[in-house]
Each structure stands twice: as structure tokens, then as C-alpha cells.
Image (tube, rainbow, N blue to C red):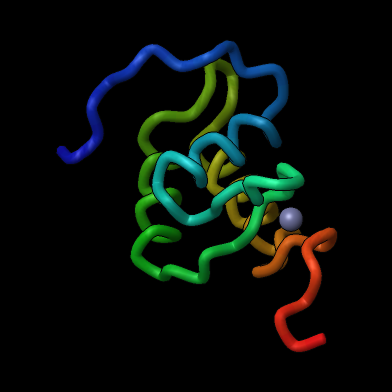
Length: 89
Ligand SMILES: [Zn+2]
């Protein structure tokens, strides 16, 4: 196992938990300036996040629900921060 058991902050919502898992896995990253989550498009990190969701979901949440939420968050996150100036502009 690569994951070390850490004390995590209290999880308020399943969405917040999924974002946390994706950050831990390195699949998403917050914009330093604006705090928007960005998808790093790393398939290995995504796979890692799915594995975490499958094995270590919040109390009262099924593995299927946890994995579905992680995928849903991934789908909803773009690969750029909406507030950062576009590098192509
Ligand atoms: Zn930004």
C-alpha cells in the first residue's frame, strides 16, 4: 500500500470528500491564485483516486457511490482555471 493513513479534515459533503481524494492522488490541483480545481489529466493519478474511493469511502457511503462521485467530479473539472488568463489569448 502506498497510502499512509492520515488524519483527514472532517468531510462535509461527498463532493468535498471526492475533491479531497483527487487532490491526495494528485489527479487535480488547485489554482494558487483563485482556488479553482484543475484537472491535471494524469491517468495514473485518476486511477489512484478511483482505487482510494473504492477502498476508503466515508462512513455510510457505498464504494459504488464513492467511485461515481470521484468520476463525476473529474468530469466537472476543466484542465484550466476559469479565472486565469488563457495562455493562448
Ligand atoms: Zn487561476
